[in-house]
Image 1 (tube, protein in one colour):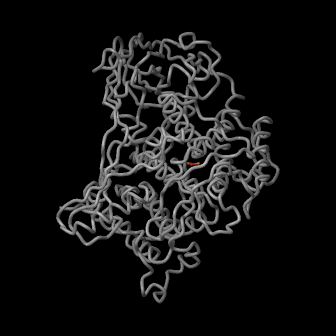
Image 2 (cartoon, rainbow, N blue to C red):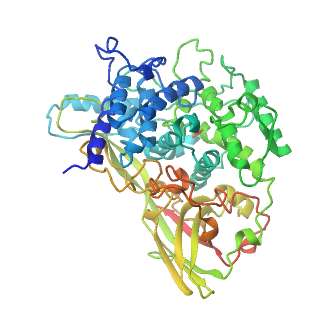
Length: 630
Ligand code: CUO
């Protein structure tokens, strides 16, 4: 029997089926529209929805606010069906997804994987065409058609080496979902829901993407990313080969050597002015709102305020003064090949949260943004003994259970992406694309901790990883390491008096998504979960938990720290946790971020020690592990 949530799940997923294909219903214009949808339909159907452009975002906001405000689940579905017929497909998908994630009566309902809804945002147009032709040529309706994905690009472009990473379906899907969970336009005054530390999480999640990318670069013998801070610098070229699906539009390529150009709404000078004002605020230690009131950028909320300003989100204290540096950067880079719209070319991949990670400039742009946050963090005092230590608790050993030599193996694996819910070809068998992604052998941390007190203590265990050497083979100092430290896990553990051995599997990581239900499963009501600990689709892919390493075996610091959970914990007004699967990067839905410490702690502030050994307290341990790529 299908439960109530399962029923809702089926009905919701139906909204996403063949969404790119829907043509304006022939009755669409005659049907009277619900008043809450009046004014929508500005962005034309078939156009690329720009996830960073204020006008597109605003239209999407009006739609998702109307969908969230619908009185009942049935009203919500009815409105969604109306909107699906005439608003832009990408905008519809974005808005309806935001509404599902944030409506109380959609608890337990999952979003279908974006890669199955819009495979064109993930798979090159050439491969998609080939798959569809293959399917047409094999009309046997029962048989699955499998087409191998063709990689685009070649070794003439040094960045090609990392295309397996940038084009990974899982990281791009994660990024898309992250921005659905935390829309830049979110208004607590209208929706009635505040998002805890949203600005800070914007900083931290993107900082981690940059750190992860640098770990991957070093694994491939490439230098770390050079931030894009000189706005008059010539950019490298890029071509994604992605299309918008059926409208015939392609995400624009960028020719080599272009520089940022003024757009009709914003100029390069505006960007420079906003950057300088933000840096001034950081150096002065306060920001100024529209009425001239000053707010100090203190230790507790400074980073959150800055995150909102820089993104910028609706919560920015003064949008007209500090502008929208990060979002306009995406738009400006995305429109660089046709800034005045003279040739009506679509934007590049930087304009879309589902595709922007494919372009190497994404990481250069975000390293620049991250450097601004870093400037602020450098104004705060370094963590001292009080901040770092945990009285009476000592880590005595860190081991990988299955691998006493502390070697973790990575390799490439094949996987399939089903196109059958995006393209309608009257056949029973599925149409699938076979692609490759990096993966690693599962492993288990074994952490021996001594509780020297006579009472049971509750600890937060924090695990990070960073390469030991830089691109030139020099050992990285702790202060350089902190920019590369990627979070692997964070969880609560009980420490009984005396010896404790904590075991934790890599698959349990608090940064990764543990399960993803396919479109087919969701459509049949499988995967819905009444217990409200369902999966919210946001989360780093488990297969990319750790970097590739290299074939010789690459050394990494595995850093483990235990802190006092009683000091870290926050109390939420809500009783049931929801979407806490990938809490480190995605937060806990409708709850306070479940760790009082600054995000990235203890690596978010300057470390003055010369070596890791010198910096460690007994509750911290740093061991060297080897990542070997086969
Ligand atoms: Cu997620 Cu720039 O915010 O890509």
